[in-house]
Length: 207
Image 1: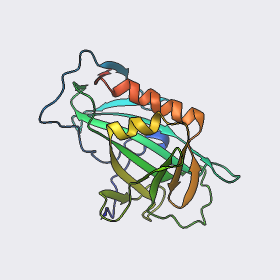
Image 2 (image 1 turned 120 degrees about the horizontal axis):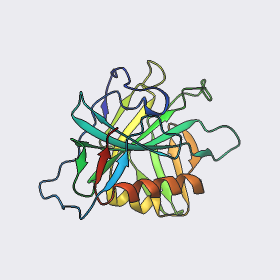
Image 3 (image 1 turned 180 degrees about the vertical axis):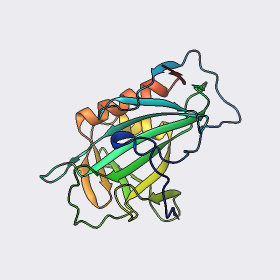
Image 4 (image 1 turned 90 degrees about the horizontal axis):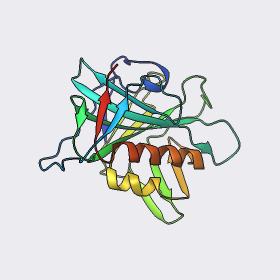
């Protein structure tokens, strides 16, 4: 595990406050040229379940993302924001993404269960049988700060093909930051939208 003690001030707030540092851009020594990537409109303030996209001039990098708020397995408000992001140099990705950054952070506004100690855990149980532990011993992930000075957020890289497999499933449980969560039908539909949007490459439509 790599622990990052500080995080640069966020570029945006609320749904896109996750973009305060440079994500690893997609690189492939043998890229597959897309027959025609999606044109993704710039949207820096997407609602939950909508595609966000922007070209960051200071980073010379584009990012495409989506946020969902899985429901608690128990009764209560959604305490965790799950984010998917791809990043690539310039404003065009000419091949399928190699990997996707998956981020789990506590809900900051309003805070939910602020007394709960956040744990650096991000695991999926797919269709009751396939276990995917992104924070297992030896796994490559980061722990950073989002809502406070404490290390309360986990970021891990997932192969795109594995993300697509999760998105196409019907029953996905998530253990994130110590909360037992469930991806709802709407959450999975949003993930499938993200997969369809970027699987053939993408171009950021600048304003």
